[in-house]
Length: 119
Image (cartoon, helix red, strand yellow):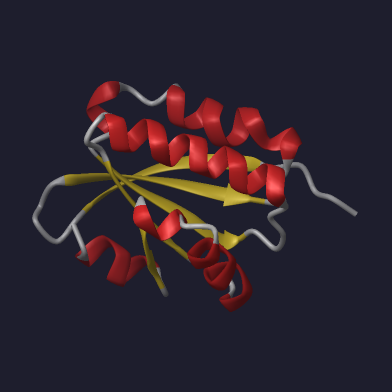
């Protein structure tokens, strides 16, 4: 059974001392996740978009429509010179993200600490 996607926004600081915004996704990511994925990203104040971490540690399933939403967000960020990093993906979805080319737009990290240290 698919669970509704939620997204929480947290703020932190990267290794450089610069602010980092963390989008924490909860639940499955699919076509019904547009508001949680794209909406949350688009509603961030411009000042909070420079460095973004995507937390997938509470996401069990991402279908092709969900991957398309993530790609849309990454493309928008890339055009605006924003840096996005991702962590918390299962080994399966790390492989899928690599296969579909998402790693051209973001780096994947095993945990929040190493992802934050990359900024």
